[in-house]
Image (cartoon, rainbow, N blue to C red; front, side, top):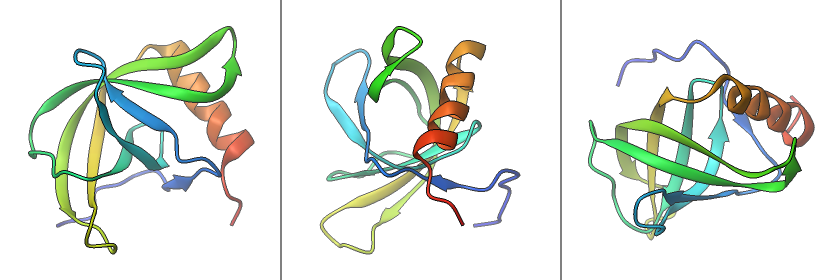
Length: 114
């Protein structure tokens, strides 16, 4: 897997829940985030190259929102360090500018500092 990431991954102090926006089923928990992508951990593998419509529940209400909706393409999926789980990398493909600002705020307020 070639490293194509331009932005540093940021881990948040929360493992936010991310749901399939169509089925309302839990897709996974957020492990890290940038304004261009996310990594989720889940109990089942996700097929690479598939577009997902997702809904992420925020840790607190931010500018009147309790969640953000976006589309993302699964880029890769592999077993996690914990063999009971899978890690999947997604590239954001459709996110409103206001929601990108919300992601930047999440990283700033709840991201681990290096």
